[in-house]
Length: 181
Ligand code: ADP
Image (tube, rainbow, N blue to C red):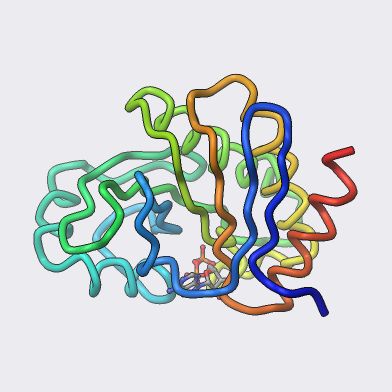
């Protein structure tokens, strides 16, 4: 088992893999694995809303929801992070319904939104790998591969994969070692 955090220089910036709670990270934006209503839910979404306070839900109510694979931005309120980028991962239905493309779109659209807002440091949870059932070993290389492809094109310069377990972090580290060559 590797030690965490794990840090790597890659084209366009740096990628870090940590194990922990994303609500504690003082970055320019944390990404929320939300649902299409953007009105809160379980897992990381519930944790972000609890930590950010009711002002976050109030701003989310003004957004009109979000399609799967898309992303929307709010302020971070009581979080140490300045912003929350809400994206809606695909529900895993066996892999034949565009789930991989939609998961990549979550990472790509979140980074594009961070770029548009001139944000330098952003942290992702392992989108879709909890309640939405995306196999973690399939999701990690999509997450890492999409970030590596986008990083040279955006002003974002530091991406943190905030994994909730050492097993999830190990999958991201393996993907990074394989894809960053
Ligand atoms: P989804 O509905 O997109 O699957 P979940 O929140 O259920 O979203 O899970 C996504 C990932 O976030 C899972 O790997 C889960 O273990 C992880 N997770 C849950 N809470 C937190 C947290 N506070 N910080 C970081 N990751 C978290």
